[in-house]
Amino acid sequence: MLDRTISFAGPDDEDMLRSIMIATDMELAGEIEEHVVLREGADILAGGRLYQADEDLFHLLVFAVAEKERGRGTGRKLLRELCLRPWEYCRDAAEPAGGSYRVTTVAKGDAADFYKRCDYQVCEASELPPPFDRQCEDCPDREACGPVAMVFTGKRLNCSK
Image (cartoon, rainbow, N blue to C red):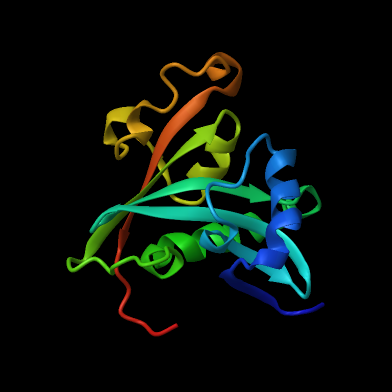
């Protein structure tokens, strides 16, 4: 088994990450270089993108795991890393000055159970940063998608990479 690494995506990763996203009814969120991927050798196994909404508030825009990797701990590994140090996985992000921070997201239906297993809690949409607090209001797929607002509350770790 090859080593699994987490890094920012590069231009050559776009097609592979896009195919993983599309398989989960998502799309890349902005430039490919703003996404983070978990890879094994040349294969991308999972990916996502964080956005810093405020000094101590981050939002997970998209997150997807390759079908062959679901249920094997791959998604949990990447999500845990993103949530423990979200400022390291946002381009041009600043580390929170205080000890606490939050990472919010909107889970699609059944994905809420995955996020709960990764220490996220259900919250009100109003707890999400704008414009994400209203992103599902007028969506024609809202009923089929079953969006669930979620939050991870973390404490800054005093450890090196």
